[in-house]
Amino acid sequence: MQQIKKLSMFLFLILSIIFTDFIFPLEKVPVDTCGTGILTILNADSTMNLFLDEQLLENNSDHKKHLPPGKHVIQLTPPDRSVWRVGDWKKEFEITSGESLAITIPEIKYLYINSIPFDATVFLNDSLTGKTPLFITWTNPKNDILRIQMDGYKDYLIPSHDLKTDYLNIRLETDKAVNEIHLQKVLHFKNKRTQKKLLTYSMLGLTLISGVTTIYLRQEADQRYDRYLAAGLPADMNKLFEETKDYDRYAAIAYGTFQLSFISALYLLFKK
Image (cartoon, rainbow, N blue to C red):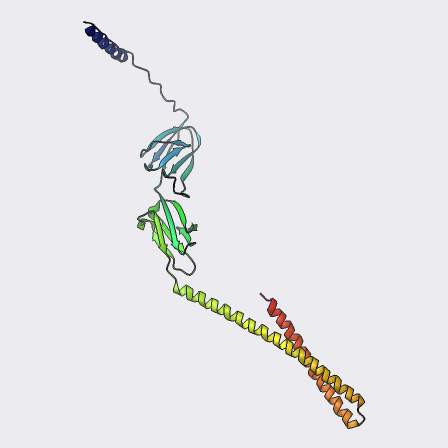
């Protein structure tokens, strides 16, 4: 009997709650959207973390938010932070009161690029990105062109739609034409250095020889002049005087050669 009473009371309470809610429904508090703008986010990648003003949003394909007027930031970050140097996609925007603004998030791709040899220059649509090895973050990858360039090697070009993975490891092909030109330049430079060394050594040798020759000729001229002063016969005196003049002339030529070769040797030694 008591169980029947308890069950009757329970059913009475349930029916009272349902009847009260039907007669006196709860009043819903309307959201005040006056003075705000409406932001619609389209094509958000569900695999990425989407933030609006540093607040994480749910992973839906589309979002619609009421925002106060002013500047705001929308940001897309990869869920895996274990890959270093992978950047985020970020966009700053401004919305006014009553404005309806739609932002389409582009397709974002992360790519690791390595090359053999490394330190090759990477261009994305002719814009310098960095040097290998390199992580890049790009948008709208279906229409991009990657170019990897290095002196002495052929340019490596690949459209983004041909990339099947997020890792690109390439071996650059040697450019024989460029290497041949480079080799010719190196050989030309070496030949010029060899010629310069030979000329420098020749000038140094000529400086030494002409210096020694100058001293020898000057001594011979002095000896002839001393003998001229000591000679008693006119014929001997004339002969010795002419020999003295010849040796003086030869000594002057040797001394001039010494000066020119010495200056030339110094110029070649200190020339860059």
